[in-house]
Image (tube, rainbow, N blue to C red; front, side, top):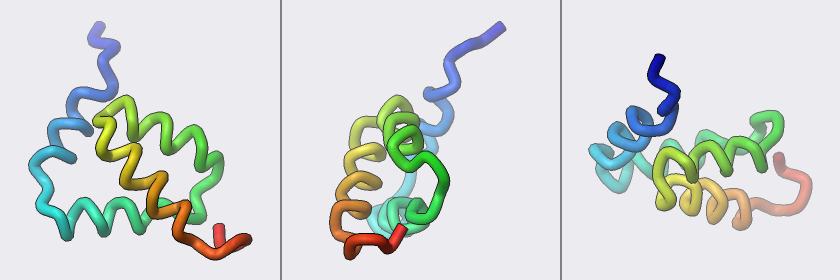
Length: 64
């Protein structure tokens, strides 16, 4: 059984253009367990995790 759950989302992320990546980053706020989501995104691709984390950092306090 294949237990690599991160290769395919990472491959998809790397095919996205900058606007698509930003839309994905911006779509993250409001999800439960945001820290876990950022960690999962980072497993798929470090730039994906960083982009989501950076977007979250720009949100005003309490906007999750």
